[in-house]
Length: 200
Image (cartoon, rainbow, N blue to C red; front, side, top):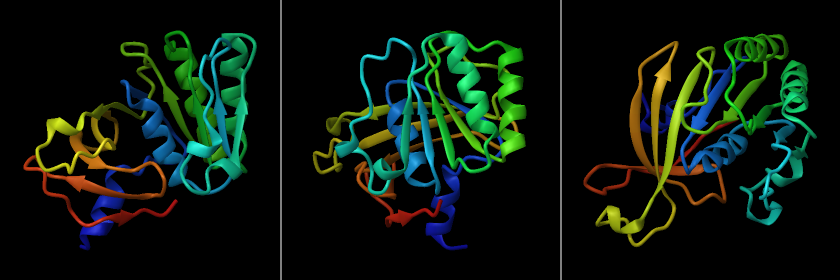
């Protein structure tokens, strides 16, 4: 099996399901997924969101497909997420709930994703996930000094898959510059594999 194909599959989220991401690098993970999903992208922000996605800083091809929604209340946010997931025209739904997801809310979102055959990514605070989530990731940026041969790069990420209903878990360090869909896996010794271009 081609190494590039293996790398592509590592971070491919199962469609028709909702996934959760926590950690300081959760937005970077969401942008990575946006770069690897075709079609319209819906990003639903909490009512008091202080920072909006900057169009000029998004990966190539994402800004033109991105629709940002900021509901008034948390109830409105969950309703908006559910409706977006039900739409078969949407490629990816990203949402940032402010409070913990109940099991009931999590199940409703999963059912909506199944109906629309859509992929959902919930950016949560640590400990605020739902047991209904298909997978849960923990993502953090890595300072360049943490890996000796990282060439003083500021685009290293540590992504851990801590929950997976349909497979194994794992932990990876990768280099992704945030501009394109291409990425490099980094070994513990700091040696990079060949770049992989994942399809959406």
